[in-house]
Image 1 (cartoon, rainbow, N blue to C red):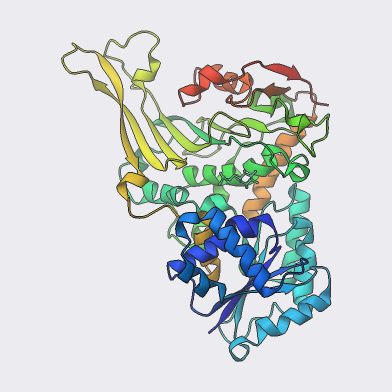
Image 2 (tube, rainbow, N blue to C red; image 1 turned 180 degrees about the vertical axis):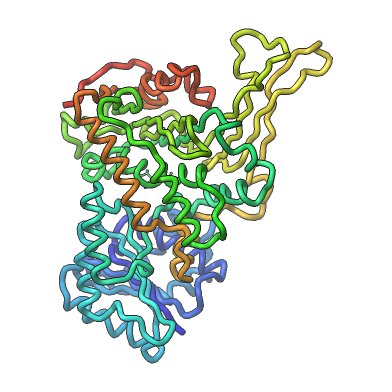
Length: 498
Ligand code: BG6
């Protein structure tokens, strides 16, 4: 059986930076099913050859180490281009024979919507009208991958979902969250449920709190038009951070299949306690990096947050009373995504720990998602020949050292293959998306109310506004990397959000 992947938005950034390099990588690893053809679709008037050349440049730029002329030439055979407007039905009717008549009409097809979300319903309706969504043969399929953002609030996400599900079934829709394709994120399941030693400790009895950080050093780059309407809460929390939270907090699923996994994730999202409007400033922090308003495309009086920190509680047996601190921002001190599980102190402190060194008496487990993927366990150890002097020690596992010959793949490689093979485990289901929006909407309502936290500016290169540190300090806790307390909030000033 043959199959094709049609990429809408083929001249865009995502196609060049992520999709074609990921497909090329899969091809090199001989994972792309044989006979897969890749058709780029966009308004740009490329010829097949011009499109191939643009994609060759993209792979050279984004995967230089993987580029090999022979492999590329073989891969390029599978590439073709279909110029067309997503709004014109005739362009889909012209596309139909390329997709439908492969291999005597039994071809499967995966449509990748790498376009503005407002166009999703347009594309899906046109695909339907051109009869491109009708799977052929007994086991044939027609699937759609949609990129984030899936809506900009609960109402718009529900409307978008309704538009899609009007035409296709839920099992044909693959809502991508590229964080779920990251190796270390998938490894969270292995760490928790493939080992017996962690699970007994993974609850309110032993865990003091959990921190989830997704920090970026870049600013809005060329995406100000999108970002200024979006902000970090919608751009990062609604999807990536809340997905990480679900994997840390969920109960063991009965099987590693899509239904069981996603059911457990939904339970976590349902258990997140709402933050009442009047408590907004108590549990949330928002910031904007200095200079953001001068970025091209950003409104000069923009109150869009580029940093947020949120303290959440889960109302269930396992996590009652355990705070989950989440933070993410642009232009921070380091590019870093990690989860820190901070364990409780020993109930009785029998050693004479130096005053001020509370750090000494707590254990933590760090799941380093990127860039240095790994797992680190901190514990207390005795200094040899030093009386009873103690100091913290780390047991470190780095993926790169342990699997030197296996480079960590890009998340899109795995996700595209999963969609081709019909495994939606690492994609978000409609109810997950809705629950995540419900939370984000309620935080945003708090930010529009009278008890909203101030929008603080923070210096690029710092770790966000000082309020983010205060969120933990007021409870005797602190963000975990060492650099934080040195850098945060330098030159801080306050601006009041309108
Ligand atoms: C995207 C956001 O989903 O994730 C971007 O829209 C962000 O704003 C990016 O830069 C971060 O992804 P990663 O994989 O680099 O951490």
